[in-house]
Image (cartoon, rainbow, N blue to C red; front, side, top):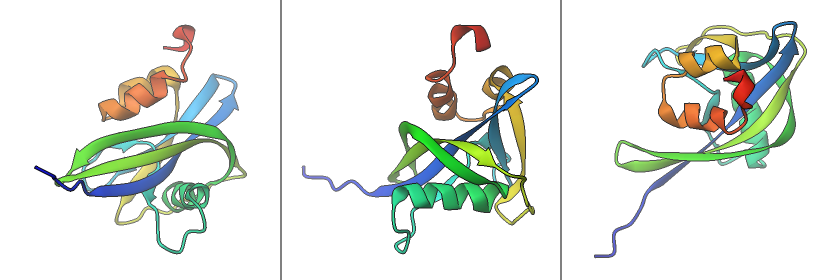
Length: 138
């Protein structure tokens, strides 16, 4: 009865900025499943750290450089018989985006928290965002 669990590790960012409308969060639109989600991706063997992997993935998927402000937590969910574990860091965008659509990412958008809660496709992402959302921003 000793069943092996296959884990797939990823890292990503919950990227924030302050605007006249208030606090906004960055979401990506995935090309393959048309899902709105936080930028994230696999931790590569040559990534020197998980933090590095998270910032690399955000830059690859959105074109933004970032500054880490805190650890946000993790989510886990089943994908193709494996358990995907995603570690997230809070980040701030630095400078302007040099985004170019790719075969994986169709686009990105900045959303207020209320907008993001309606836009996010997956419950795990909604739950993650709710952890950092005061009642008056929901």
